[in-house]
Amino acid sequence: MERQISGASSVVCSSCGAVLSSEHLYCDQCGKRVEGAVECPACQSAIPRDSQFCDQCGVALT
Ligand SMILES: [Zn+2]
Ligand SMILES: [Zn+2]
Image (cartoon, rainbow, N blue to C red; front, side, top):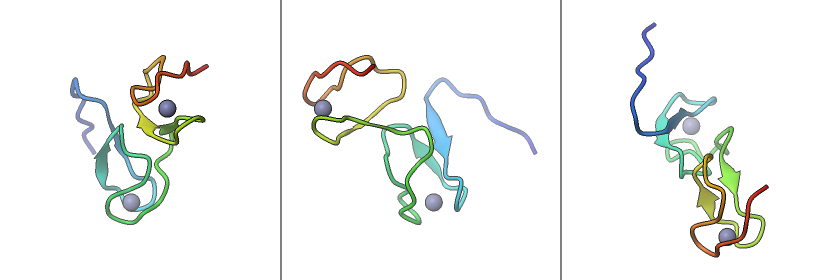
């Protein structure tokens, strides 16, 4: 199987295989939590993995 590497960060649901953008915390299709998704400890927003700060509340992610 060929893997597409694109500039946009995307993740594949480990449960159903749906391709989701990395801002998703939970799969659109099956509702499973996306592996590698980062959730802000302060405001529970989904944050792209490479973010250093929450874009919702600005808390530093370490
Ligand atoms: Zn899924
Ligand atoms: Zn936050």
